[in-house]
Length: 130
Image (cartoon, rainbow, N blue to C red; front, side, top):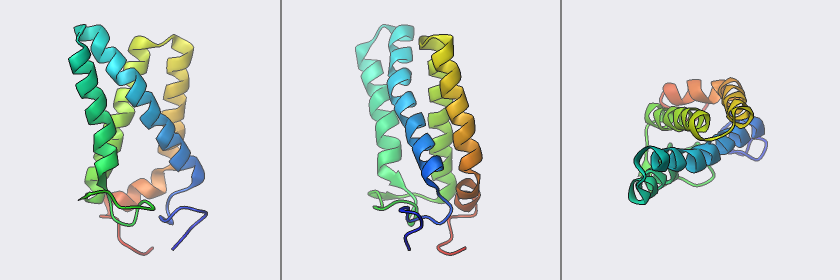
């Protein structure tokens, strides 16, 4: 069923949008932090591949408009997202100016608060109905 344009009744435009913003922050700051720490383009590229592939491939059925190729239990999907948020906040603090890093941290807080109902749904194993 479609709920405000989203297939998951526990998701909102704000939670989906801030979650996507956190993915973008992780995808950009994470590899840059890896490169700065290792001076290795290969490791930076590998980190980008992992950071993009994990959320793209591993989706919980019923959570997105399209299921990914790897059906992932709700708690595992939530763990992927928590990992992305940690990379985004930690790497942003390492590689970007403090105001930008603070904006990433504020976005994380907003995503966590607005996404709490969905997170609880994922932790319960993502049952199909309320």
